[in-house]
Length: 217
Image (spheres, rainbow, N blue to C red):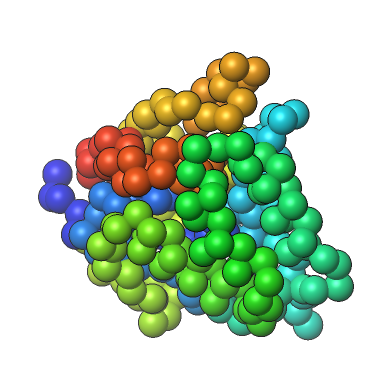
């Protein structure tokens, strides 16, 4: 099978480990900005591990005038203090983790500044995480829906928080690492990149590479 030149991904809010393993593993990445928004996906949610188990963090969005709205045009809603809630939840889950204090200042800013559009927030978060982990990802934005090289893998719908909708991915093999609540839950795979970052720090980059299995799938 011909080796893919890169991969097409949806946008993601503090995307899961599998998402970032693709960013670390492929030489070129297209981020889809022209698709219609899909609910109940990582586009506006992240899953972290708290004292009582996995916790979803959902970014509320404004409803458009029609049933379909491009992801790049989707506005974030601020009728509730979701930023404050998200940061408090993250702090509660990870303040005792080995590397929380190293990265807290860089990441807390995302819960203070108000972005108008979800895509812009996610893009800045993703770039910041890549910079922190020194991952030289070549990010590109799609110019139109379905306008991307044929030699790229299409993973826009293959990384999903709903288990029954999460398609098989032989190109990813989660490598266990020590989590804050490992003694209580054992290892919980493929949580938000926040979980890996706060628990493993600089070693997270190598863990992402170790989890990446290029099988041209």
